[in-house]
Structures are given as C-alpha cells and as structure tokens.
Image (tube, rainbow, N blue to C red):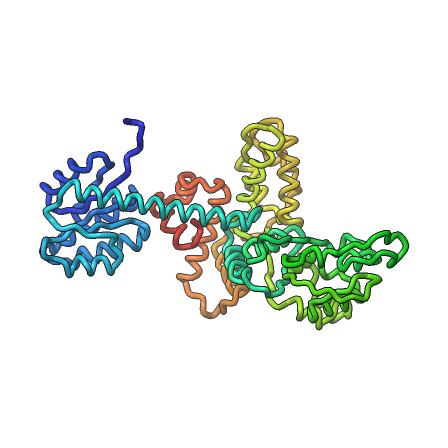
Length: 474
C-alpha cells in the first residue's frame, strides 16, 4: 500500500485546531495546509492539487468573506481545473451560492462530518480525473489530426488554429511554402479535421507526371480514347469523390489543363478523356506550390482566374529557419524515430550538434533535416550524435545575430509580417516576444524536458509553467 501515490489535498484554514482535525480525518491523502491566501497560492503552484477545501474567512479579515472570494478567483486563475470545496457556516447559504457562481465545485457547512465531507472530496477527485482523461483524449485526437507536424513556433501554431477553423468548411485552400516545409501534412490535417475525414484523401503531384498523361491521370479516360487505353479508367478526381483532392505543385500545371481544372471548379463536373458524359463530383480541393503564382500570372504562365478560384483561403507555411526552436525539437524527434527503426538503442544529440542544427539555415527544410538525422543515426559510432556525424557545412552567421538590438529588430520584423505595425510595438511587447523566443529555443534544445529548461533559463519550475501558459507553449 505504501507504494500507492497519495492524491494531494490542499486544506486552506487559519484555525490551527481545525487544520489538525482535517489532516487527521483525510490522512489517506497527501494533505498540505495553508493558513492565508499567499501560502495557499504557493502550495497550489508547488503541489498542483486536484482538490482544495477552503474557509472563506481568512486573514487579514477572518470575520469577512472578501479575502476568501479573492483567493477563490486566484486559485481558478492559476489552476482552472482544480475543484474547490468551500466550507461555510450553517446559515451562510448566500455566500456559499456566491462561491458556486464564482466557480467553486461545491460547498459544505461547518462543523464538518469527516465521512460526508470525505464523500464530497472523493467525488471531486473522480470528476477531475474524468475531465483530465477527456482532455487527454481530445489532445490525442488533435495530435493525430496533425500527425507528423511538430512545432512550438508562434506562427506555425497560429496556422494550426486557422486550419482548425477552416477544416469543417468546403473552402478551397492554397498552401504556399518552400519545398519540405510540410504542405502535405497540413493538407492531410485539413482533411482529417473535416466532415470528409471518413472518405478518401487523394494526393497527386502535378510536377511528377508527364504533361501528356496528367489529364488522364486527373480526369480518367474511356476505353479506346487513345492507344493503350484498353479499359475504362477513372481519374484521381473521381476517386476522391466525397473526400479531399490534394494537388501538389499546382503551379506546374500546363496551361490547357489549367483551363479544364477551372471549368471543373466552376461546374463541379468532369468529362473523362475520350468521353462525352458529364460526371458530377463532390470533392474538397486543397492545392500547394512553392512557386510565386502572382509572378507566374504576370509572366502569363498561370491563369489569374484559376488563381482566384484556388485562393479562397491562402496559408503561407514558414520555412524551418524562421520557426524558433523547431529545428532542434524536430531533430530530437527524428533521432528517437530512426534509432528505433534502425535498432541503434537510445541515441541523443550532443550539445554542439544541437548548436549546428540551430545555426544551419536548412534550405531543404524539414525534409533535409530528416535526411540529415537519418544519416547521422546510421553513421554515428556511438549512441551520442556529434556535430561531425551531422556533416553540415558551416554557414557564416550574420554578425551581431545574438545582440539585443538585433533580437529587438527581429521581433519587430516578425510582428510586422504578422500584421502588427512596428510603430505600435512597445517595450513590453518586445520583451514578451524575446522571452517567448528564448523559452521556445530552450525547449527545443532540451527536447521538452522542463527541469532542464528551467535550469538553462535560470528560473524555477513554477515560473516556467507560468511562461508556458502565457505563451501557449504547454
């Protein structure tokens, strides 16, 4: 029995005799006590108890309820999922109901019966556990919807939130970004989070199929439509009926096929090559390209009317070099994956190897990083991957990159790109962004280990938790 971990229970009570009585009554829990608001918040941060019992009458005004109500609000701000049971006087129903309105889980009138109050506490624990399990399940569903996407960068996280908003719609989405940034991963997330998730996700790379075959690959063909057409064959568009069609490298579509794709987007019907029957198809279109389509339109290499059909919603995926902390974080993930795949035991990255990964610009983005880590895991002489194992060529770093002035400039540039005017930036915004980037970089370096992250940042774990919550990095 001693090996069973006891659940922490915080008792907020300034009456020492009652404190002792409650600790004795609930000794099956890991009881911790506090006699005022300040110590209560400190215990909340330290032990993160699922359940709290508290008296409303606390110092410096134990005869009133103001301090108790203020503490209740602070507890729910710091730990919103905590179940707070308020202890009140026998005839104090008005304050008990006010506590419930403020977010308390339940109330109990003094003097307390250990058995009855124990039932209330146990019920609170059970509800907390159920809600935690529900949150874990929701998180796992969300993670599976973004399978393969690892990020803690603010711009990428904003993009993920946008994906969640637009996924349930039928809007055509155009994904822009360099090769290897994860455009297909985002396209699959759009499908997995949509009502079409049970239907097919069909991907076709427009740049990988010869022009002469691309039309029949997209729209299918009838028997005898051309030499070698021995039977009727349906195309990718029909295969994706009721589901999602992902057109990768749509900028490589030849002009005649652009016209046919435009007609399909307008009419939602197709004709197979060599056929005359119009076939209605219900699909959601997601496109991607690394090319500048607006420049191609100016050069008459891409139809403007098709662009406006495809660009109902445009998502620009940032390159890896602009995603703060992501290179190291993704590298750690790849190390674990490839070490398991190639039976190399437990592999890890040396600090100098992480420095190399963070300083390298990754022109090939995540795909290049994946290949680099795979090679390093296979070729490493030991379980520790060194900078030499990575084989990255040195990149001359810009002078003063780590300077405070440069950091502030980078923050201003990023915020401008995100739609914030630089003349509206204040010192607090710059400081917050610098802190967020520092936390993100450190989390990437230590592979999410919070103890190591707090040590490197020179802060306590509770302070780190506050930073994670403030910057949405939990």
